[in-house]
Image (cartoon, rainbow, N blue to C red; front, side, top):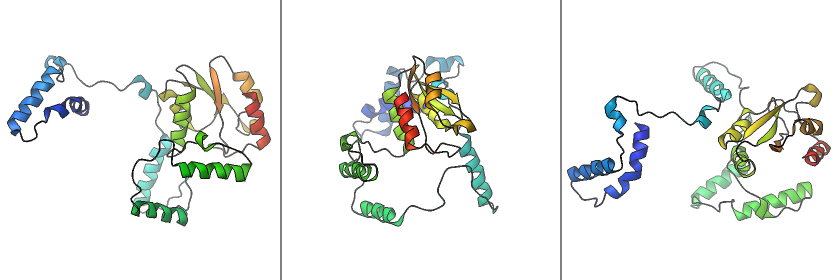
Length: 243
């Protein structure tokens, strides 16, 4: 029914004019428009199910099991059990007070409309200033893009850099959603096994040995997920040179 309703939505808008037409006439117009646009598939009269499968792309994405664990842990906690949450990466403190107040002030001032697609210019300039102060890097604010979380940034980066059939190198074990971002844009993840000897991180040697004509880059996390290991500046520089 949801799929049928979705299809109907594309033909209803021109039908509801004028709005003061009698309900019976409006319904008749809707039905005629649906018939003209073949909304009601002839297969329905032949006993053939109209339900279409989800895309092969979406079926290839595995469940994010940690969220199921979180839901179950929350159920147990709501039932009165003492639960220590180790299933999801989340701080044990709330948002800092200055950020809360700034958000409340923005809402009170009516700042609830669309912003620039890349993010507020003032925010991008502030981010550039942070990198200049903290890392002595001169970054043009035009190169900075603000996203609602890291997942949005990774999905955009995947869409920008990876064509269908191409891949990134990813450390394995690693954050499972990273390979799903690639699958969503019909790219691939080439998983590179890592262990304690590499501190669960990619190395220039591993990049060189696993690189092939379909490789377009490597996705590196510091701290790593789920192990928490860090890369030094020299190690990051060596990886950058290897790519």
